[in-house]
Amino acid sequence: MGITSAQRAHNVRITGAPTGQPILFAHGFGCDQDMWRLVAPAFEDRYRVICFDYVGAGGATRPFDPQRYAELEGYAKDVLLIINELELDDVIFVGHSVSAMIGLLAAKQLPHRFAKTVMIGPSPRYIDDGEYHGGFSKEDIDDLLSDLESNFVGWSAAMTPHIMGNADRPELTEELNRSFCRMDPEVAIHFARVTFLSDNRADLTQHHTPTLVLQCSEDVIADRAVGEYISRQLPDCTIDFLSAKGHCPHLSAPEETIASIKRFLDAEPYD
View 1 (tube, rainbow, N blue to C red):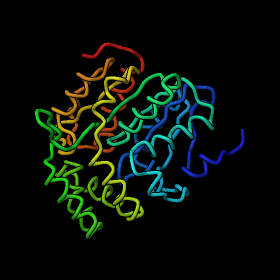
View 2: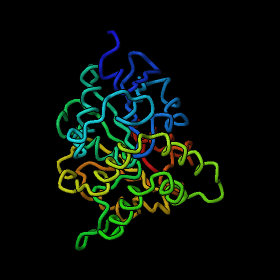
View 3: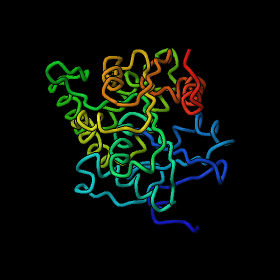
View 4: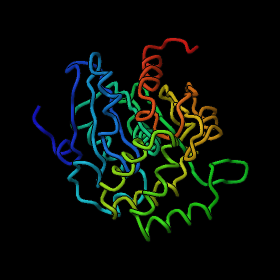
């Protein structure tokens, strides 16, 4: 098979075992596929490893269409394009942050193409709603988006230390900030608004694909209450509470992240 249009548009990179089960790594907001460099290679001996960039990130070349990406379904459509054009079946989808819900939406459209999903730091809704705890008030999110729109670079510098959550390792915060700043600001601002105003709670109970939720400690974006909520709503879910701090364990604790995913994929019991 030659290079497909989706491969070009989303800078798809394929490594690992050519005939292995496909494992698709999807990065979060403000990131690109380089964020998987410490985790993805650990699966190349057994799996066909696929990484890509969303529109506006990394080496993606797809033109940005605000209407297409008015909701997370637009990003899920891109995931499905990659899966369909590469003729992937039995897919293991690993999604960080907002990509957890993007993967859920993609699986909702073509459930027979997905074997398992891994959600790292997921949240179905960031804004508190009645008894639901999302971690942010509506005013919090309005202020966050206002600050982002007025000064994206300044917002990134201010937010990345909180997102990374490893104050004793400033190099991690610096890397995340550089990643944010590489993203097209127009796309980033739009993506942030769609992300932080999304509500996918109703989709959780319809997701029957076996799922692993990786819940970090001291995660200011998606805290323990959010992870526990998701694990109760998903019909077939395992939740692993990592010792890793912050929202990006694939950067701050790659070994722990790899070990948890491998236990899940091998269906071994958790300690």
